[in-house]
Image (cartoon, rainbow over all chains, first blue to last red; front, side, top):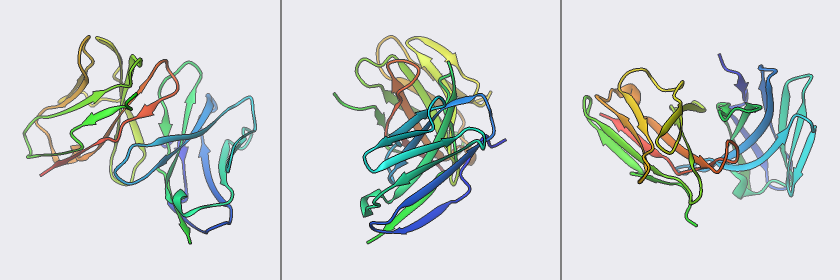
Length: 112
Length: 112
C-alpha cells in the first residue's frame, strides 16, 4: 500500500528553466510534508517542508505547493541548475508521529 | 559538530553471516531512526529508538533483525543469518525531538 506516490521516476530539464516534481498521497491524516534531496552514495538531505495549515512555502529557489483537497504536493525549482541533479524524495507524516512515509523518488537531471 | 556518522559505508557479507551496522547520532540528539532503501524503492521506516529504549520497531522484520541504542556508544542494527534480500542501503537518522531528522550517509549492505 503505497501511501506516498511519485509517479515520475525521472525528469530532465534545461538549465535555467523550471523543474516541477510531483507527489500524491492517500492518507488524509498526513499533515506534514517534506522534500529530501539525495546524491549518489550520500544520505538524503532535507530541502523544504510544509505544514497542512499552509498551501505554499518558499525558500530561495525552492517552493513547495500543497493542495489538500487533491492530496497533492509539488516542488518547484526556479531556475534549475546542474547541481540540482539528484533524486528527490517526497515524505509525509501525521501529527504526533515520527515516522516519515517516503515516495519512491524522482531522478532530476538538469542539462547544461 | 559532526553529522550523523554511519559505518561501515559498505559491507559485504556471505549468506548466513551476521551484519552489524553502526550509527552515531549528532551531538545532542537522543532520538535515532533506522530506514532501509531497497533498490528502486523509497526509504522505509524500520525502528525508532531513544537511549536504551526501543520505542517503535513496527517496521522491522520479525526475525533476524534487532536494534539497540545503549547508554554509551552508537546505535547498532544487527542482521543475523543474512539473505540476498537483505541487500539494501540502510540509513540512520537522528533528531533532538520527533521532527527535524538528519540522515547519515548510509551503509550499503551487499549479501553474496
